Structures are given as structure tokens and as C-alpha cells.
Length: 485
Image 1: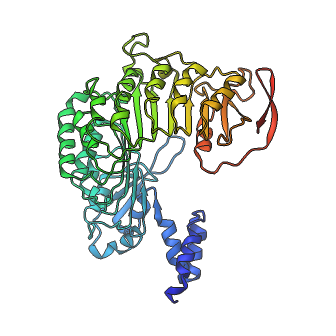
Image 2: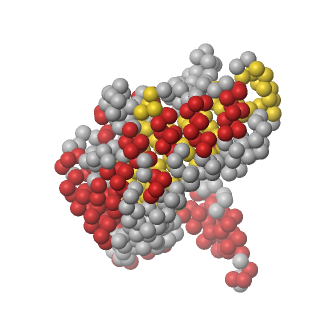
Image 3: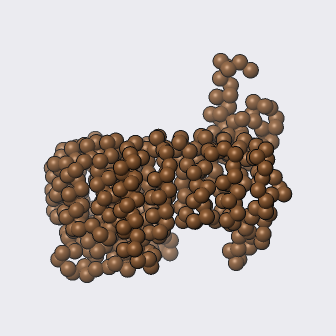
């Protein structure tokens, strides 16, 4: 078949849009040789568990112990009883070379991987059996037994890494692993940390964490990063992030455990020349740290276009909400944000009632929004998980205050087990479609037993393809208004 016909490329495009049903797709691959390559690339392109790949090795080299029992949540264990010979890796390499996305649990998948599995992977004849992998995701901890064989999962083609570190020890292991890798194309690094959920003594890991970050910074391995989400646990990590020349998107956790109160503001004075998107996450103990960070954004982040502020609840570190050094108001936050003239998108997210208690005056009113009217480029505003007190006349005033607004979402107090009703009043502003105003459901709502779905509303409004809904009449504060359904 002549390559100019582009038949293989056409089949690749068709198969990539089909659902992965292994039996039917394997049958299709046996019909014609031209179907084989596209179908195999589709089946193995997205690998969420490495145990099927390990089972491609000869059957006499591995065994499965135990049975799957859903009632007791027992999972069989995959164990290697012998090391495959070099010529027995051909089938493994044949399928591993097709993997483009590794989204896998390291230990718990279809099978629990025994330590012998990682010892066997060290004997792979080639260093990188995954030559086409561009994205690596893992939402589980890194076992110590995995580290010797870890390099085969980190080829030089990696562009995106997302890793979960539930403990400070696993976070330190990941930093040490990154210091041994060569990733010239890495553009996005996301490290999900949950240190406050563990019982570890974090002070024991701080010296090693600082040393690991210093080595990672001096080696230049992160200089290709464009998007970074990380908690460094030390000031050195923040300074390292500030010197990344290509960094455009940054998510910082402000309540790290050895950072002085003013170091967050100092961080923004030493770098980030092209940063356009910033997410500041704070535990419920110190929301005023957000205020201190926002003081220097205008002068030192000239390219900032999107700002996301998140307050999370942390029961183990909860402070006194009545403490003036901890509590702050929405008015203070908005006044600081109003000093960033380049801002185009703003979102404030509070994850729970405990987080809301640290912000005084949690009910959103028109007076609180007035400072934001001075932002000339603001096109998107999302104020999530808070009560809203806006009359119909106030809604009209809000629409006039944001002449360039395209997407606006106010309210959604969704931590209660009740479903919010979303209505889109018809506003005489051409750019504002849709305008979302969240009205909480009454307590006797027949859907009260269901969990609310604010994330659906969030994703719908963030989408660039929003169809105009059909109009209908609703009642808002006793006044009949035309709205969208």
C-alpha cells in the first residue's frame, strides 16, 4: 500500500475515536493487516495498569496468588517466580512501545504487584521500553521496591507528570528520583501532596527536602517547565520555581510548614517573567497569607491573566476563626485583586464550611463586588461555594459593572446535601452569555437526598462551546423575569 494514500493515517484517526472494547477491536485487527497497527495502538495507547503488560511475559515466569473477592475487597497478587531470558522480552517490548499515556496505580490495579515484579523489570534488555510515553499519571504512593526500576517509566519523551504523594516520605522519594532523570521535554509537573493527613513528623524531612530541591534547581532539570503545581515545604523550593524562565502556570500551597509569613510576598519579587496563570491555595488557618501575597502581584507579575484563590479546610491544623490575624474579609481580598490591571479571569473557591468560617462576611453582596468593577480586562468571574444576597436590580448593576464579562458564576453553596437551582436571567449585555446566578434550593426539595453537582456547572461555564438555552419565565424574589432554561 503506497504511503501517499494516507490510508493508515485515516484508520488511526477513525480508531482513535472508537471506544476501547478489546474483543471487538482484536477481531478487527485480525481481519486485515492494515487494521492491526491502528487497533493495537488504540488498545495499548492508554495504559492505566501495568499488570496486563507484565502478563505478556512467558507464562512460566509469573503466577497469580489468591482470588478477587468484592465483598472482602481482596485482590490477587501477581508474583514472578523466575526472571525472563533476554529473548523472552520481545512481546513485552512490542506492546510497551505503543504506550503513550501511563495512568497507573503502582501497587493496586487489577493485581497487587509483588516486589518481585519490580525486580524483574530491572532485567529488561532496554533501558526505556516505553519510547512514546508523553504523559505519566500515578495517584498512589511510591513503594521503595519500585525505585530501582523506576527509570524505565520515565523516558526522555515525557511531557507531563502527575504524581500523588500522600506522605512527606513519598514526596522526598519522588524528589530524589527526579534528580536522577533526564527529561528535556518536560513541560508540566504536578505533585499532589496531602501532608496534613499523615501523622509524620514533617520536621524530620525538611533538611533532606531542602537539599533535594537545591540539587534539582542547580541541575537545571526544571528549566523546561511551563506548568508547575507543587508544595516545596521550604523556601528554597519557592525560589527555584521563581527562576524558571518558561513558567506560565503555577500553583502554590501557602501554608507550608517552615515558611515565614512574609516569604510568600518576597517570592514574587524575584522572578516569574512570563507567568500568566497563578493558583494560591491556603489552609483554613491563615487566609490572611493570601492578602500578603496579593500585595506584590501588580508590580512583579506583569503578564498575569488568570488568578485562582482556594481556601481548604484542615481540621488537624484548624486555628481560631475569631483571631484577627487569621480572619479576613471578602472586601479585603477583592480590593487587593482590583490592583491587578492585567487580570482577565478570577475565581475564589472555598471547599467546606470550615474554610468559609475564616472569611468574615461570607454572604456576597453588591458592595463587595464594586472594587472589581475597575478591572478593565475581566472576562470571567467565578465565586464558588458561598451565599449570595443580590436582588434583581443588583444583578443588572453587576452586569453593567463588568462590560467585558463573558462568564460569571456567583454562589453555589454546595457543601449542603441539596441541589442548587441555576437560572440565567436575561441581561442586556452582548458579551454576557450565560450569566449564572445560583439560587439555593429550599430545605424540603425532593432532591435533598442527592449530592449537589457544582463541578458540572463549573465545567459547563468554563467550556468554550456553550449552546444558548431556550428562554422561559421564572420568579426571582416575587418578580417575573425572562430566563434561560
